[in-house]
Length: 422
Image 1: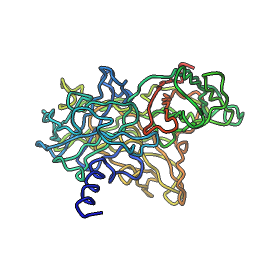
Image 2: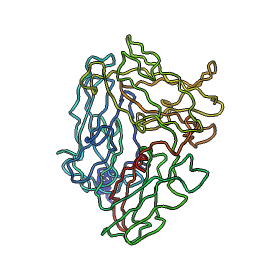
Image 3: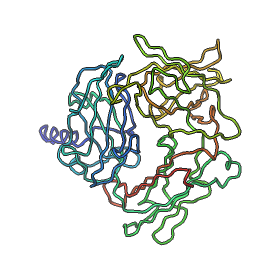
Image 4: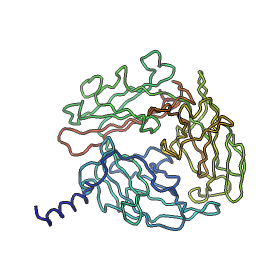
């Protein structure tokens, strides 16, 4: 091959995205000054980030840049398979109009101690359109340079071709009936061409959008005509866990029920009440938002996107576990349930409590504490909250279709389920 031909091949390889991801995409923020990232269907704030193909539905991405001023942010999207690895197809096959667009909708914060710039886009739009269903990763980067990545976010585009019914029931294992929840469901694929259900159809179940505990179903327990039945006795069990803890900082002038002290000077500081370990044998109901967060301002503001302030939030966890035994983390949708140095609590041997300080925008937040035993990679979600069958949870069922010979995976069904609708 000549040098010119080799250069052309390399250029085509890179333009098609062949240089890109070899590991699954995740929700990430790459710059510390980027805060309060939201992505949801515009029909409802903080809703699941899914739209129907060829509909008028749109997704809204919003985020704050604490650097302030204005910056040249761009965005694009990339098609992925059910495992969030890039699909090996050209952008022209899944995008219409342009392959990238600039974020031009931004506003500066107003009457806040912490200055920031709020950026926002709604898509699909005239510049970025989508041709096929499936999983997509949204990428935001600076100056049109994809090596200067700002954030990534997963979203879903469905083209309904199957019908799904589902229910939450107690597990078949009697030892788990008090602590776990089991999801049984059926998929009717109708006239969809399914030659081998064990390979053509995949069904993913998530609890409260938590990808790390998601279960991918590759084989039905039984088949009745065009209906795939997923009710195997030993599959699709989830720990019910406990209701999320929460706090409300929509007002920085009055204490809500979880606030101990609020200090306002050159910065806002909020000290929360001490969080006790909550893994009691009996379940107690209290309302939560299934891990979500909602920016808001009740101190006279009219637009929390730009007039909600930021505050240093101080959390304290009371527990008998020491840092010799493992590590404690705080998680929720506000930080994508990620375990990192930024979400790791510090143990104080003087008061035998764990502490962490987070810089968060005013609003209502759900959160919980999780534990990673020393020398283990296995996450313990029940260490500080226990697990109960009665806990109210949301489940998302996504149905993927990839017949033999197909070049990409379609998303052909979605079903949202809440345990209160058992």
